[in-house]
Structures are given as structure tokens and as C-alpha cells.
Picture 1 (cartoon, rainbow, N blue to C red):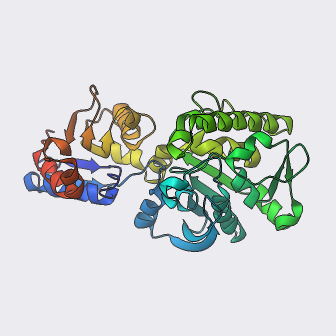
Picture 2 (picture 1 turned 180 degrees about the horizontal axis):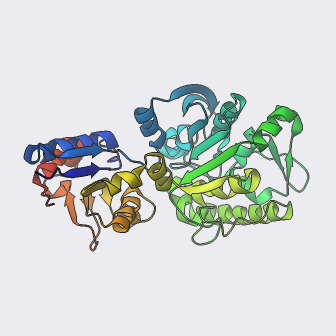
Amino acid sequence: MKNILNILIAPDKFKGSLSAQRVAESIAVGIRKNYPDARIELQPMADGGDGSIDLLNELWKLTEHRVEVHDPLFRKITTSYFSNETDAFIEMAKASSLALLKEEERNPMKTTSLGTGELILHALQKGIKNINLFIGGSATNDAAIGIATALGYQFFDKNNKSLLPVGENLLKVESIKSNRSVHGDGFRQMLRHSKIKIICDVNNPFFGENGAAWVYAGQKGASDLMIKKLDAGLKNMDAVFENQGFGSVQHLPGAGAAGGIGGGMFALFGAELIQGIDLFIERFDLENKVINADFVISGEGQLDFQSLQGKVVGGISKLCKKYGKPLMVVCGQNKLTTTDFYEIKSIMELAPSTEQAMNEASVFLEEIGARLRFKI
């Protein structure tokens, strides 16, 4: 009896080029040229970065909610989040991202996560108790005080003056108060019984040389002087959290994610921080799909050392090692020098230019799929 070849294709999106679904489909088309009888399962993946909830919506047909909120500079915009019967799926990038700002507007001293908080508020007021917040791509370094402001907290300086929830004010915060009059006791009761999961793909501490400001604020428009002030502000917030009974978050893995969103949400709301790839592995039952596969194919636009640190390829690699499955990795460009993958194929090995690789990625992925060889 002829053996049936079982192939699982589970890639991330190729950012700026193809969705994860299109990446998987293109590779599959190529494979079928030589293995027409193969059983191929497509499982598009994400790791919690921007675009994650769009993938969930594409696969699960969720309900979209359109909401007017504030962008990182307090301007009104209309954006959206998704939900099913029990969960809201909210992406920080929809309300508080760099993509919403012009290059000259980027300044994490002045930006806020308020709009993200307004999306959470809308979901809670609709009775959705499970909040899944994806925090990639943020323009902020405000330690979640913007989100907290939308949900009824106020932050005060030494003169008991209420502070605008932006990065430059972290250093001025002396006290935190919950304003009962903002949404009422009913909402506060609902908030206490809600579950908030923060989905991220980094493990940075809250402050310090590996913390939120020093590692990420420069990408958000901060000068060296701004970074020093933001880092000092995060250190101050950690002390305020501890002094007011919330506890220090400095050594919490992921506390520094998205400009301190991880730490602030843990302290103020008891949020659970989880690796994005772990969420998608669980939600898509990927472990069983790997078990049932003879070969696994994953990939992303650029393969580098970060790919192995909480990204899609790294998460799938761990599963393949656990169950002794060969992993093939397909990418746009490979910057890794050594790996223990079964095979790596790069579009740039075929494309004459980066521009053509981006514009015609589907064609090149189909060609790569046709070149893959499997033995069972």
C-alpha cells in the first residue's frame, strides 16, 4: 500500500508582501507539482505582532466592532477590534501604533495608549469578559497609564495635579487613584471579574539597559536624552506601583513590552502576560497537527536570531524537536548562519532584487515549493 505523505505548512506572514494564508497556499501549489497525492494541511500562523487579529478574523469569521477612539496624539479616529461570544481580540496597533503617525510626529514623550484603553472599555461595556490584547507595533512608552486612564484610573503629581497619560509624565507620577465616578461601580465590578491577557513576543524588563525605553524608544522617535527620561520615568512608576500595593514589575518577563504596557497592565489589572506564539499554538491545536505530520514547513519574511525568540519559526521549531519532526523553513531572506533545521530555502536565492522578491513573493514561493523533496 502506498504511503500518504502528510505535510503541515504553518508560516507567519511575509511582512509587506504576503499574508500567512497566501504564503502557505503558494508553497502548497509548488509542492503539488511533484507530490499530487500528498495530504497538505495549511495552518497560517502569527505571534502576537501587528496583523494577528486580522488573521484570527480571516480564519474564524469574528464579529467586527467599529469604535471612535483617540490615536497616540489624542486625535479622534475610527478603528476596530473583533470578538466572538466570549472573547475580545484587540490589537494595540489599531489605536496606538507608529503606523498612525507621520515620521515627524513620532515622539514617545508625547504619545499615549489611551485609544487602546477605549477599545478595551468598549468590549467590557458590551459584556465581554475575556480581553486578549495584542501589543505589537506601539508608538508609546507610557507604562499603560493611557489604557488605565480610559478604564477609570487617574495619575497625580506631587501637587495632587492630574497628569496627562503620556510618556514624559511617568517621572512626575506620585500617586494613583481609581476614580469611581468615571464609569460607576457596576463597571468596576465587571472589570474585577474580567480576564485580560497581554500577548507579546518579548521578555524585556520594565526599565534599565534591556528595558522598554533603552531597547525600543529609539525606534519610536526618542533621542538619547528622551530615552534617559523615559527610563527614569519607568523606574519611578515601578516604585509608585510598589508603594501603592500593586507590587514591583521590574523583573516580570515582558514587563517592558510595548513601552511598559506589559508591566503596567499586570500591576493595575492583574493581566496575564503570555507569548503570542503560545496562544496561537493552543488556539490552532498546532501540537496535534505537528504530531500527525511527516514534514513541517514554516517561515517568515526575514529569518534571523529573533526568529528563534518567541516568533512563529521558533515556536514551531520547539514542537518539531519535541516530536522528532523534520522542519523546513522558507523565508524571504536568511540571516542565520547556523541552525538545526532540516532545510532552509530563501526567496533571495532566486530573486534578482529585493523589490522583485517582495512584489512577486507568491511566484518565488511556488517555485521553492516545487524544489522541495520529501522522503518517508
